[in-house]
Image 1: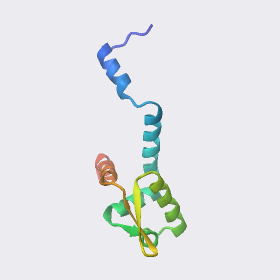
Image 2: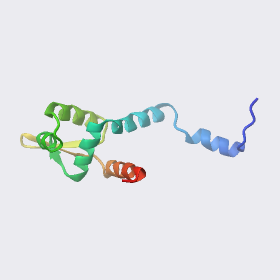
Image 3: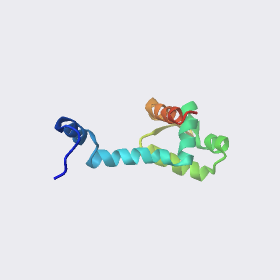
Image 4: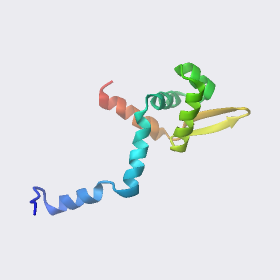
Length: 111
């Protein structure tokens, strides 16, 4: 039997507070979105302005196919929304919280 240095109450709070199961899996998937340089570029650009694939591709110097693929991933992850205007689809952050997360990362790194 191991002796814990912390009290039972704190041990219980930690046990209850650490994500498990589907919550943990969802958090891992969510934060993995931020582990790709292309996706970070796209999210950062969309934090500034709503943009179409062509403009994102040109402004970020990325292949249009790559941009489309990553936008689909971001949309499926719930971080990006799209809206059609005629033949053009514009993309934007789904929620301002996504921008807050990006800014917190920058702040944490001291940039």
